[in-house]
Amino acid sequence: MIAPIGIVEAYPLARFIESLIEGIESRYKVQNKSYHRRAHRVPVYLMDLHQLVRDRSNEAIIVFEPEGKYIGDVEEELAELVLKSRRRVSLLFGSRTGIPTGIYRYADLVVDIAPGITLSTEYAAAAGLIALATTIYNKYRLINNEGNNSSSR
Image (cartoon, rainbow, N blue to C red):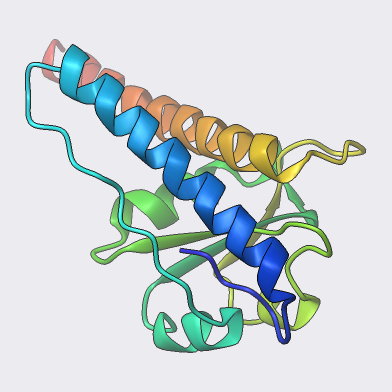
């Protein structure tokens, strides 16, 4: 989902979208050759950020921005939010000017994954997904270990 804020210059946006689609096509070809299952192209949508947040207000929204709480301090809350969510979880990563602070009030959680470091957009999304996956994995592992320990007593 590409979710610009307000007015956006058309030519840079077009180049960005073309590059994104080129990357998706490249990855799709690699997956078709490499995977033993059917590959799928990732759909790309364009929607104003404020409309996106409004439309997803009944779903979990997590904002990744430096103004948020350090991920190490909210691991439990983050894992619970994702694991217990019965609906889609939207992850918002800012670029250029970041996510407007007004959006924060609609977020279930605002998280900082690298205190004191400004990550470029392409790294922020990957780093955020890795941090989220690690947090969920750790929580899932703890739940499974507790279940295994209690059953062996």
